[in-house]
Length: 494
Image (cartoon, rainbow, N blue to C red; front, side):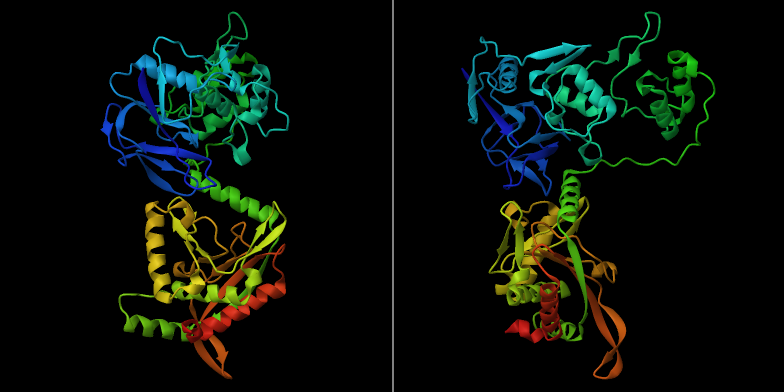
């Protein structure tokens, strides 16, 4: 009996459901120590390194770079040299067994006998496919899928609700079905039978990775040609229009007549969405769909606030207060003054959660999207504390090392694009929060000041509110208090 351990996808935060393996930091056969960094995992919010929970030797990389697995999914197998490859194969097959079959205990250390064959998931064979039992069944509710995917699933008896779609709004394609079958240990048919005994066989495999010109790809879709069947005569090793037409003349003689085709279009680079980008898209789309937004605008005079900032920075050069630091403090105090804006909407219970402290979420731009680290209890902290905390949060956000509790939650958000020269914009509410403040640039504007025409530094802010929990008068009361604090910033020092 020999011990086998696993390295699995960790659960970083209550909302985490899956993680994507970005890269391995060790190789098969390498020994490692507890707390040593072994791989990098990306979630919908952060990318972070996974530290080994124990000492061991990595015997098998189960997951490959770019693969997304659920929390608890097996990334790698750890065992000493006395464990054979057959033992590891048996262990992995046992973990993949369908529900109801004997499965190993979920503890970290598991023992198996090399002499005892592990159960293999039952398969359904059809047309060269071998579909695992876990994917079989009938979809109860309608599932968004392409016509080809729907027809293929019906032929194979696959429950589409068990497939993850990669298309717009999660639409399932044939490629998604093929990937799910492979991931579950099944087999995908490469070629379908010829239409005629003497006719050519047609490929059925995924051709999305075949290099082809945009025109050739579009023409192949129109004619029902799989790009895997085409010769490659185009530039840079790509399938061309002529290659597609040549296959069409053989497979579809009736359609061999010249076809009018639109001219080639400019090439577009395909950039797959990261987990973070997908999460942002899903959350904000849901926010726009469910939260009735309304917006209020206000112009703030920054002269007094800029004067105070200059004085404080001159008195304490090590602090280096930013305008954003002062606005975080002003928003926090305004929320305490108008607490009915410092809320979240609990849709499940149809209730409003009102908070006694202001936890300010601050939008930080990242290469793959954005994240909102939180300054907790900003109403209780000094300007120096807020400044130091923001510096630390932004640094770790850009390094991808924030902890889940540092960006999950919050009672109110601010998004500042002023440093990018944006004068005014609207922001989408960060659910389940009830409001978000969009901050524009401070600009020199000609205004009336004390009855005289003057040039003053002004800033336009826009408050987006969820009308289910915040009314117009309430939002206006918050902006009035915020304006009072910004234009009389000494009140923040009390």
